[in-house]
Image (cartoon, rainbow, N blue to C red; front, side, top):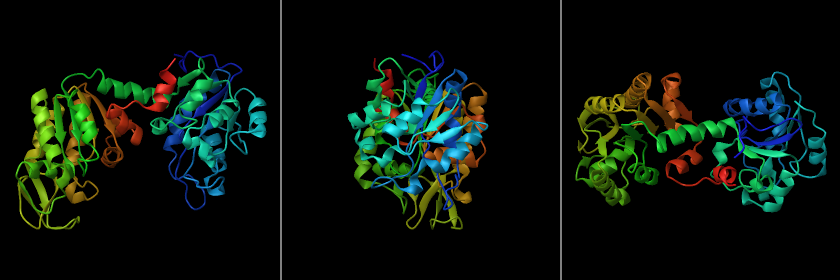
Amino acid sequence: MQTIETYDFSGKKALIRVDFNVPLNENFEITDDTRMRAALPTIKKVIEKGGSPIIMSHLGRPKNGPEDKFSLRHIVQHLSDLLDGTTVNIAPDCIGDEAKVMASELKAGEVLILENLRFYKEETKGDEDFAKKLAENGDCWINDAFGTAHRAHASTAIIAKFFPNDKMFGYVIGSELESLDKVLKAPAKPFTAIMGGAKVSSKITIIENMLDKVDNLIIGGGMTFTFVKAQGGKIGNSICEDEYLETALNIIKLAKEKGVQLVMATDVLAADNFSNDANTQIVPANEIPDGWEGLDAGPESIEIFKKVIEESGTILWNGPVGVFEFETFEKGSRAIADAIGTATAKGAFSLIGGGDSVACINKFNKAEEVSYISTAGGALLEYLEGKELPGVAAVREQ
């Protein structure tokens, strides 16, 4: 398999699938350029090695063909600025004669952006003819959009067949896969996964896949109460998925069979209202009074969680253990973040994934204290579930 480090880009037009689906305000100004900055090392590597980057991306969700508010022309100047004034042009389309001519006339070091891929329904349908037309714009293909790697779209997977010997990962996908594989395929022991969030239903496949890999599984957040109720506990008004009570019991049984230590809250911070200003009390997790709901881990639970995490060699965190958006109920998630930072400083490898966990880490200013933060969303979750991602398989297949 080719790599971006060893490939000879000299004189080549490199088609790079990036994720520049950035938020724009009403004046079409970029409000968060994180995704663009993430792609810079890949773009710069092509330029450094004498090639010409041709950028492919989607933006927003156009419904019926081209719409100016979703045009990638809105990001051209910002990309040029991020590349220290490098010439960046935009083609009026992503396929067709004009795009091909502009691509062919690119000089080494110049950058071309193809117009929004999703102006064509063929992109999301994974249309092979559309992929072929995209491929005609370049000499090689780099997939660097991990956030869309779980989709078999024309530009993220199908296009690979037109570059059998000239396809590779960019640095964004490369670092995501390296970090994920370090956790999933060769974790330093003990391996602890922290699964939080509101619903068992959204995490069940991940949890089942993790039970074959982890030594400790911490269940936190709202889904705790589905497990508590399944075991006969009283949960008051706490969130619960009654249709998953049997599933929760099965997870408990499987964990025991596989020798996994299942760790759940023994006490919680309960509130009489879903509000930062609610009245609160510490109660046993299985004895929450009627009219009250558990909104954070209690002090005893926090100490148990911290001890397990700080003694771990590998840590995966996906989902908060309380309503961290409210200051009153952030203590549990903050303690998790602190413990992960402590373990990482002692040599553990820590991976934070999933929007809410990333928001936690950023809110508590702990981003610099963990090993890796994944912002991939759906692709990350599917990878954790053990699924093969089309955008990854397309590059790896020979």
